[in-house]
Image 1 (tube, rainbow, N blue to C red):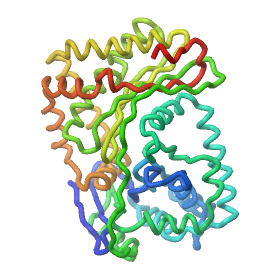
Image 2 (spheres, rainbow, N blue to C red):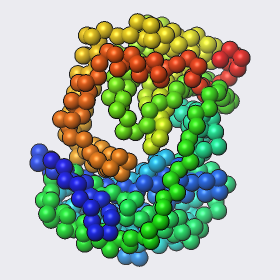
Image 3 (cartoon, rainbow, N blue to C red):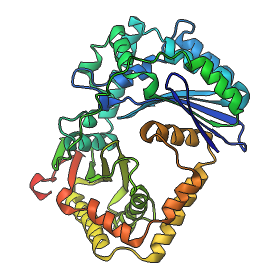
Image 4 (cartoon, one colour):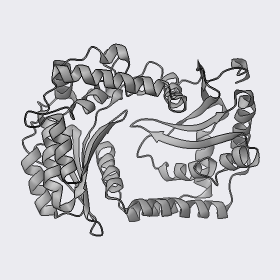
Amino acid sequence: MFELVTLDNGVRVIMEELPFVRSVSFGIWVKNGSRYENDQNNGISHFIEHMLFKGTRRRSAKDIADEMDAIGGQLNAYTAKEYTCYYARTLDTHFETGLDILADMFFDSVFDEDEIQKECNVIGEEISMYEDNPEDLVHDMLQYNIWQGNPLGFSVLGCPETIGQFKGDTFRDFIRERYFPENTVLAVAGSFDKAKVRGLLERYFGGFTRRAAQDEAGVCPAVYTKGVAFKEKEIEQVHLCMGYPSIPIGSENAYTLAVLNAILGGGMSSRLFQSIREERGLVYSVYSYNVSYADTGLFSIYAGLNPAQAEQVVGLVRDEIRLLLKEGISKEQLYRTKDQIKSSYILNLESSSNRMNSIGRSVLMLGYVLSPDEILRRVDEVTLERFQALTEAILAEDKLSMAFVGNLDGVEADRF
């Protein structure tokens, strides 16, 4: 069962006991990411995430690593467009040690100037590595062109020009602006005693200073801009990403969209995989996926292919979508897909890390958590009529955008 409480300072805490495991996963979720940046500080959220591992007043970077390794725990973090998560996973007997390390990093990192310079070089290499991976780059390129001029299209990593300007005070000022109690969620999932854990969280986070009341500036609404973008890379393949405007996080159509994604390109039995890879052998990888944000979303289709076959593959994707729009799906396929989604969800419940991620992100972005039974019920409520209506709303031909990265030999812009 879940327990959602709010500390006196406004920090929300979501806990879920999993008595069948011996681990505990703990995450600090902050509603901050690249969407809250601008042209001058793009990349600062991700850079802060890195710097929290570089030493506190009590611990050096090596101390942090050594102490976590000594208890066999895992410590990590990641930054997305709308949130950042710092998390640890330990045996239940070592929870307090992991919590002490993570809280120390969160509240007392020193942002040493020498460490900043070294980490700037590290992130510069991360950016270069990303640029050298067109299979990843094409997804960001599609979003950059769709959300033109909006921070939602910014790279989470930033760019060399922005990250090279950051100093310790730059980070501290940004943290004061974005890291505050009402913007923070603590999520705990696994084997633990709720009363004891709540007491520990009060001790470690109860002193988190509440900022002066002020109106949230929020985010600039993202407007979908249709288009086709190209970027040349000296490689053998061309990587393609096709996109359609989709639904925001928390939409009542979320589970209907999960069915659509599973049927169209969500796995090896999907229509795109069977048609383009299995039947014709034109690609190694082809799949679809959806990302939802606070106020919008993007449904995307990816394929890596020989540039000479780009027009054919795009045509086949469009053909499968037209067929889906025209004929829909059968009751049998709907039931089979819903069972597939429910089975995958239930299997994921067995991981304390997956549960912590799910409940933490849900409380941060939506303010609530759905129980497993409620989620299964909502999957069951997907009907053929709802499926068809959503498919027609999202996969409209006049809303299609595309991005190509890689070998553009023979990939002619006017054909797309």
